[in-house]
Length: 210
Image (tube, rainbow, N blue to C red; front, side, top):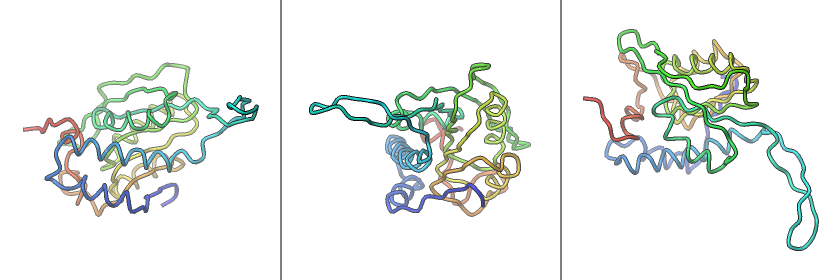
């Protein structure tokens, strides 16, 4: 599918296997999310713009390159919060803004409950962070909010995706770049990714729903 990058790398496969394992503890699950977020970000930021700047090394004057665009990280609450710190470690100048959705379990549609985007002051590049791209409903709602904000380039970073979610995003936002560690088989009757890794938010925050 156009603009979808599923990262093929031994480290991704190794960490993803542990991420899926139901025996993985919450603290290890968080560490694995962080490691995979770094690998996703490396791939997703290869086309960021640079500008040259003059600097002084301990030996002489030279020039170096620095990022020239405003970059915004947009985690989708709550699971997306688990991906923020590792991306900020790579891009410490990035801004962080938040979008919150919960899924109506009857309709499987997203319901917005929080939005923090500064009006009229859009970033140049937005990285949307959400470990799971399942039905695609929350992703499309987030992309719509970011487009209305005025962002010209948006990338979606997820650990795993279902084909149904990829098709949904592509139908509504065909130019959005999507970076994932794996594309899984399908969604089950409850809208969960199979084989998946369970509820990422519950596992990140050790707050399993009863």
